[in-house]
Amino acid sequence: MALFFIGVVAIVAALWVATRLATFYLNRRFPPIGAFMNVQGARLHVLDLPAVNGAASPTAPAIILLHGASGNLRDPLHIIGRRLNERYRVILMDRPGQGHSRKQYRSQSDPRIQADMVADIMDRLGLRDAVVVGHSWGGAVAAAFGVQHPDRAAALVLISPATHPWPGGIDWHYKVGAMPFVGRIFAELLAFPVGLALVPCALRSIFRPGPVPDIYRETMGAAMVLRPASFVANCQDIVDFFANVNAMQLRYPEIAAPVEIITGDTDSIVAPAIHSYGLVRDIAGARLTVLPDVGHMPQWSRPDDVLGAIERAVERSGRKLRSREAAE
Image 1 (cartoon, rainbow, N blue to C red):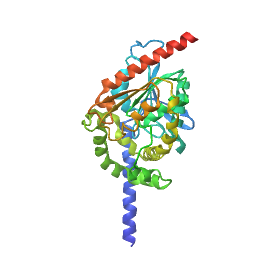
Image 2: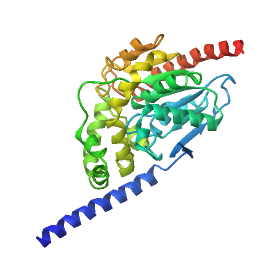
Image 3: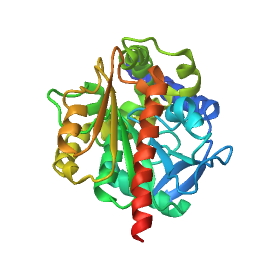
């Protein structure tokens, strides 16, 4: 019995040490690249990139890029953020609990609260309004921003957005990770071994039918979500998401900003028929682009099409800005 107990302790200690070492390695491999802001009790990692060549019009809105679940700001930065930054001021943030941002309260898993955090960041950066671009889970934050801050949403671009309730459930490890106390133990001991086994399959599923780009693995830091605090925060985001979007969807018809929606027709993560088509139904004037043979990551699989949608949103927001300035 004593040997069994010693063996269990040794295994637990080894798993905990392995998690600490992996967390240390990932933090060193993918360090913060922005500044930190304390927003509503959370410590948020924010990257503010002025237009590289100063070619942006003085009236052109800034562009805010929001990543999805299990992600961080490096995802939109490397594939579309750098290209947008040639002409526009681009702001990116690690959503609460992800990347190098810290979540203070579980209630900060609500996209509506995260939308308010975006508005607070804009205040700190001196931005009157912005084109808000959200991918997947981040699409719900962008939609919430359009509802709650209509005067500050110059336009919205929703990429493979998750915005409506869906049939079915969620994977077991999210439910375990979101449990009080038990979730943190699971995250400290088992998230890395379980997660590392699941990550290759998860990446294939989000890019299917296309391949996973090599540069994605090299630059994105997908395994950062397996660090204990990030793992628990992400699980909470996903477990609480159904109830949050169920409440949000009733207010989508209030969105008055120009809206561009772009999705792949083979997205197996977020069903376009429920979410993207649901937004077109709910938001007057929303424009939908469906990309053939593209999965959940059109910003990587078809970046030119996504950039085109963002440019259309900027154009439409420009008309809005000009009409506002004329009225003033």
